[in-house]
Length: 175
Image (cartoon, rainbow, N blue to C red; front, side, top):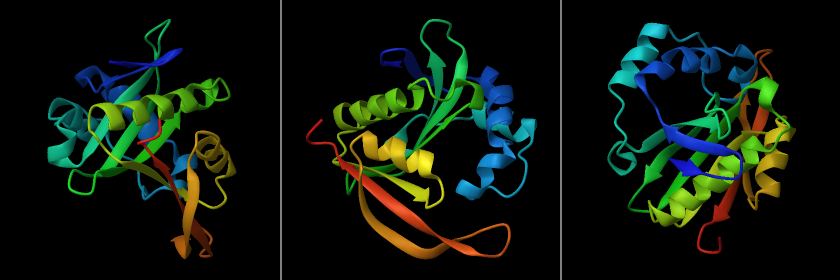
C-alpha cells in the first residue's frame, strides 16, 4: 500500500468489481475521457481477477483510493501509457462525488508521484485534461503540474462541438 495523510492507494482486488462498476458507469465523467458506454460487472470482475500489476510490462496500473481511517474505497488512481524507455506516464484520478473537496485527490496525486519516482523510477508524469474540466486543471496545477501544450479541437463533445485537450506535466526529479 502507498500511504499519504488520510488516504491509501492499494492494489485492485476481486471484491472491487462492484466499486469499479459504480465509478466506470458514472456517465457524468464520460465527457472527460474516452468512455462512451456502460461497462458490465462481469467485464470488471474478469478485469479484477486477471489484473496484471506489473506496470512496466503492461503499461498501466490501477489502484483503489481508500480512506485510511475506514479502509472504504473512495476513488481510483490510474497510471497509463507508462513508458519504461522514456521514463514517463500519464495519471488520472477519480474520487466519488460525496468525497470530493476533502483533499483526497491531491493526496492521491502526491502518492502517485512518490511511487512513480521512487519505485518506477520515472522522470515525468503527465495528465490529459479537457479544457472545461476546471476542477481537474486546478487540482493538477496546485499539485505542481505545468501546462505544456494544448491540442486544439481534440475532444468531440456530446453536442458535436469540439474542445481543447490540455497536457500538464510534472518533473519527478524535484519532488
